[in-house]
Amino acid sequence: MSDEKDKSLDVFGIKPVAKSVEKVTDATVDGARAFMARICLPAAEEFGLLLQDYVKSWRASNAAKVAQKAEQKVVMYHTDADVKVHPRIAHNIFEEGSWIEDETIQDMWAGLLASSCEVTGLDDSNLIFVAILKQLTALQVRVIRYAIENSNKYVSEAGWPYADNVQCPLNTLKAICQTEDVIRIDRELDYLRSMELIGSGIGSGGFSPDGDIADISPTPLALNLYVRGEGFIGSPIDFWSLEKKGVKN
Image (cartoon, rainbow, N blue to C red; front, side, top):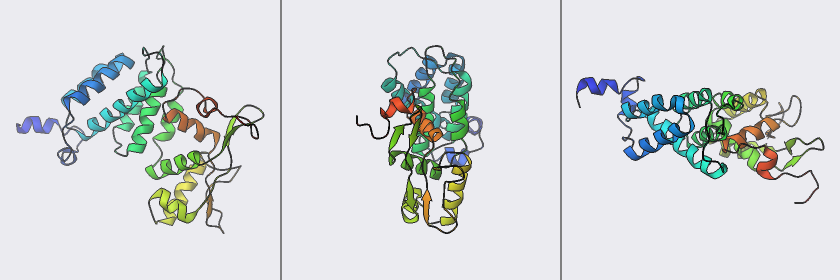
C-alpha cells in the first residue's frame, strides 16, 4: 500500500488504532450498505462511501456493527420490511455509535435505529433517546439495564408504565459497574438522577449521605429508553405486556 493511500485511511486521526483493527470483511460492508440503502436512501450513498473508502478505520468497523445489529432487530420487530428512518436520526446514531466499541451500548444504538424505522421515514421521536444515550457512560448503561431487568413493572391506575423501587447494596453495585471506585459509582448515580433516569420519587436516586444502599429505581423515561434501545417501536406496556399492580396475567 502506498504512503498516500495509507494516509487516506487516517481521516479521523486514529491511524495507530486503525492499524490494530482487522479489516472489515466485504460481506459485512455490503450487508451494512444494503441495509442503509433500504431504510435511509438520502444517507445511503454517503454511508456506503464511508464503509468503502475507509474500510479499515475503527469508526467504520463500529458503524457497520451497529447497522448489522439494527437489521436483526428490524427483522425481529417489524412485520413490514419496507421501512425507513429519518435521515437526521440515522446521521446522529452513526455519528455517535461509530465511536463506541462497548457491545451493550452498540446494541442500544442499533435498537434506537431499528425502533426509528417506520413506513414514512418521517418519525423523529427517537431524537430524545439519541440525546440521552450519547451522554451515558458504559457504567451508567449497565446500572440502568440491571435496574430495569430486575424490577417489577406495572401500569398505573391512570395508564402509565412504571417500575417498583429497586434498592441496591454497594457491593452489588461494584459488581454491576465493574469497578471498586465507590466515588465514581456515587457520582455516576448522581448523574443518572439528574437525567431523571433513576429515583423512586422527587429528589431520590443514588445514595443517601448516611447509607450504602442506593436507590436505582428506573423511571418511566428509563423504561422507554430501554424499550426503544431494544428495537421495539411500541410502548413499555406492550413490550412487557404490563398489567396493573395486583392483577395477574
